[in-house]
Length: 192
Image (cartoon, rainbow, N blue to C red; front, side, top):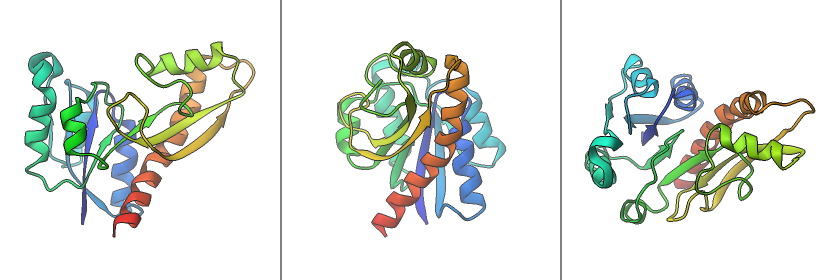
């Protein structure tokens, strides 16, 4: 069974989409562990589903965060690391060790509206401020830049008249919940 690890910082709704698809057989993988960089509902969500989870708090470990995460992942036989709303920046040493085995989901059509400071509601505020007619979400490989890795899959979402950042965020999130499991399935099929 293809083993993945999911890293979270918030509610874990993208994690839930992976759990659901793996339980119903649409996604042929095992979630070996879930790691939070702070106490959050995503970690509790994993525990509720009987998935091994832990918090490696970024406020406690600071510059050692990635080393501590690597210690956990290295014992699990993980083949793919999925950043699902994970807000800590991964250091270069970690990226190089796991090169080609870390993916991230971002709530815009990269390369637009990516990079430092572009996360969460800020992305949707920027999309609306720029007068864009469409937005969307992107799953990409993680490299040593911020939101700059090779794109795996993208889905477009229309920007509608009267959209607020919160309304657009909800519309994009619906697509994220499909795109992330589809991207994982694509990677698994390419590696088997």
